[in-house]
Structures are given as C-alpha cells and as structure tokens.
Image (cartoon, rainbow, N blue to C red; front, top):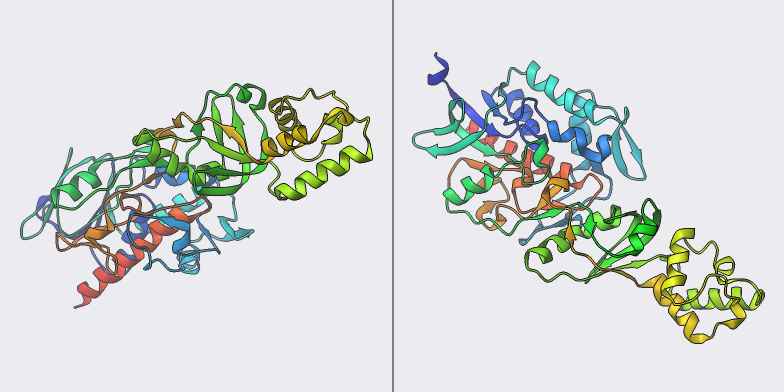
Length: 405
C-alpha cells in the first residue's frame, strides 16, 4: 500500500510525554500508530523538566494538586502506574522526599528510553511536521506542512503555549474551536514573576526558605531573588493566579513570610526575649539567625531602623514593625516572565467538552485530547508529567476497548 493510501489506527499530534506514552500503549497492543511532531526530535521538552533531572511523579498525588475550571474528581493516584510504565522501558527511579527522578538524575534518560521504545515498536514518526488542520470524513485527515495522514482515530497531545523555543503550538486550541469546543483563558504557570522593587537589587542571588502569599493562595519553599523579580518553588506554584490577574489587569502584591516556622505572637516573644537578654546589642546582631542575613538587613531597613541601633533604644512600635516586615514583606508584582519562561500553560480545552472517562471530545467522535492542551495544570513536583501520563492512559484504555470490539 502506498503511504498516501495507508490508514493508521491512530494519528497522535505531538510527540511529547503524553503523546509518547499513548503511542507506546497502543503500539504494544498491535495498533498501527503514527506520531506527528513539529520538532526534529521527540520529547524535546522532557529534557528541560525538573531542571534537567526530570521529576516525573510524586507520592503525594490527587486532584488537590491540580487546577481547572472544571471538576477534577476523576483524577486519582497513578504515580505507581507511571513508575511501572517507565521501569518497563528501562528507567530505574529514586525517591527524594516523595519526588521521583530517574536514578541517573538525567531527563535525557527518560526521553531516550521513550524514543527507543517507540522505535522498537515500529511506530511511524513524522518529525519536523507542523500540523495545520484536522478534518473528518469517513476517516480523519491530518494535514501538515509536509504530509497528509489518514487515520481512524486522532489524539491531540500538542501541549500548550509554554516554552516556545522548545516547540509550543496553538494547533490544539484551534482544532478544539474548529469542532465547537471551548478553550478557557490561557496564562503562563510555573514561572517566575517580575518586579521593579528597589530591594531586589540588594537581594539578587539570595535563596531563602519562606512562605509566599498572593491573594488567597500561598505556598512555602525556597524563594529565589533576582534583580528583576522573584522565583523559586513557592512563587512558581502560585504563579498561575498572577498570570490570570495580569490578563485581567488586576495585579496585587505578593507577601513574603521570612519566618514561617513561627506565628506572629511567637516571633514577637522571641524578639522581646533577645532584646531583653542583651539590651546593648545592635539590632542586626540581636536578630541574627532568624532568616538570611541580607534579608534581615532589608527587614530592619524597611522597619525604619538603623542596623547598628542598640536594642534598648527600640520601643513597642519598632518591634511591631519588625514583626510585620518579617511576616508580611510586600513586593509589588508587574507580571509574570511570560509563556516563554513558563513550564506549563494554565487553562486550555475545557473539560466540559471532554468525556473525562475516555478523553474523547463530546463534539467529535473518535477525536481525543490529552496532556497540557487540556484545562488542567498542576503545581511543581512531577504533577504535570503525571497528568500527561494519566490522560494518555485513560485515552489508551478507551481506544483499546473499541479496537478489541
């Protein structure tokens, strides 16, 4: 049969983590699978996950670690299933406080193992092919800038708008809209935020444990200060909300708690005890150890106190100012660092138009959507790769059931 006459069982648009998982599960069952990828290699974005170490899942799992405009009750704990899947293709893992990484500490291990598996299964891979349209007649026709592929089923696993240099794409959203599906607002997530606050010039390069709050959302972890903004785990986990507020032009400040291990009352008592035990000590020496030294200097300065002031010169108002700036240090946010710097896209194809038992479009039979293109995004910690796997697994089970029937 000539290539132009070949009809695949499924054409998967996007050879990222979700697309590769789906291709492997279906090809193992004997389906004729075609992967279409706009990059010149498969799984390119996998290489950048977990700072190149690929934190692919987490022992703490469930719907509470994800965001969507729709109900996520269908999301369960699939981290052991994902570990088993990767182990089957040769990825030995290790756990660090519940976070799972390949034992090699290299994201390349995961990408290369996935590529080796699709090659061994004989999956057709069309690289450097940008999909331009998906049409449906008796079968689907997936049109690219280079090819035209016929297929009984199509799965859109094209990802979102994040990391354009690694091959982001709007095609999934365009095809959803073509088939009368809704796409929610899109914002960058797992991304640093920007600020012009002058204190950042002094704090640039500092890493410190703290709690970050934006409106009603907060997260604790290592905060990283840069001359033009703030990043780190807690900032990235709540950055989606800043991204959406940036779209709506309703940004608010972030609040930083530099002593999350103490309540306000405990911190007030601690400061009073330190001051009373050595009344001739300077403020800086008396407060040493409460947080990072550079942050300590900024907190004292913002409390309108000179660092070399003797503590017996301070009154209750000074102590209250210190406590406030330790617990509610404010940084004005001007926005996020954008999609190009983000690890994932918040928002996407609405789950209202998806049968979450199958990942099939409710408006177009045999058209499936998996992974980041959907309106599901997780916090840092392997949750987004786990979602990519979970959604692919759901779709694979449904397609295999139909194929057997």
